Length: 411
Image (cartoon, rainbow, N blue to C red):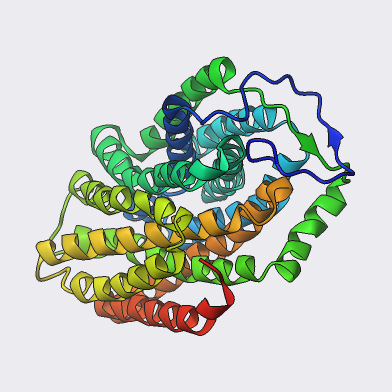
C-alpha cells in the first residue's frame, strides 16, 4: 500500500512524473477545485430540464415527448461511463481529463447554435457522452486521497456533482430570462474553457502503476467486477433507484411550476435548485460516517427520508413551502446514499477505481434516463399527483431492496 495505491505484482509503471507526495493529504484547495470542475461538467447535462418548455416551443416538440431530450443525454452519459471512464485506469488521467473537457466545450457550442432538432439531439448526445469527465475526476480524487480521508474527499467532490446538478437549474433559469436559452450553453462553454486553463497549471501529475491491458480487456473487466463484487452490485441497484427518483422530481417540475395557477418565471423555477443545495451540503458528511462504519445506518435513514419527501412534494400546487421541505429532504437523502455508495465501493479494488466508478455510474445513468422519460409521460397523462405516486413507489422499492440486501454488505 502506498498512500492509497494498492498494486498487483504484474503491474507496470506509467511514465508520469510525480509532483505530489502520495503519503500526504489531498489539499483543501485541490479538493474544492475538483468539486467545482465536477459541478460545472455535470451541470451541462441538466441545463435542459428547466428549459423543456422553451425547447418544446422552439423545435416544435410535443410536451409528452420533450423528456426525450434529457433521456438522450442520459443514455449517452451511460455510454460514456462504460466506454470512456475506464480509460482512467489505463491512460494518463491528467491528459484524459483535460482532453474530455476540451471536447465538451465543442459539444456545448453545437447545442448553443443548433437550428434543427436533429442538431440539438446530436449536441445533447455529445454533451452527455463527454460529461463523464466528472467520474474520472472522482476516481482521480479517491486515488490521490489517503485511506483515512478518502470518504471525506469523495464526499466533498461528489457534493460538487450534486450541487452542480441543482444549480444548473438556477443558472439556466437566470440566463434564459436574461438572454435566451442558447446563452446557457455558450456561457457554460466559456466557463469550461477557463477551467481547462486552470487545470493545465494546477492539476497534479501523479505517478502510479497500471495494468498492461488492451481496451477490450479493460471494458470486459468492468463486467467482471460486477460478477466478483457483491457490494458493487447492491450499491449500483440502489444508485439506479435513487437517481430515478431524483429525475422523477426534477425533470417535469418546470411544467406545473410554469403553468397556471402558479405561472412562475424561469428565474424563480431555477431558484428551487438553490433550495436543494442545502440538502446536498448537509449530506456531504455521509462519507465520514461511512469511514467510521455507519454506511448501512446512513443508507437506511436516508431511504426513509426519501420516501417521506414525496408526501411534501405532492403539495406542490397547494403549498410552495411544502415543496421546499420535500426538495430538501429528497436531495439530502439522494446525496447521502450516493456518497455512502461511492465510499463503500471505491476501496474494493484500488487498481480499478475508474472501472468501479464506471460500472456503478452506469446504473446511475439508467435510473436518471428512465426517471426522466417516465416522469414526463406520467405528468402528461396523470398530472403531478401521478408523478408523486411514481416517485413514492420507487422510493418504497429502494427501501425494500436495502432491507433485503443489507446483511450482504459490510459497514
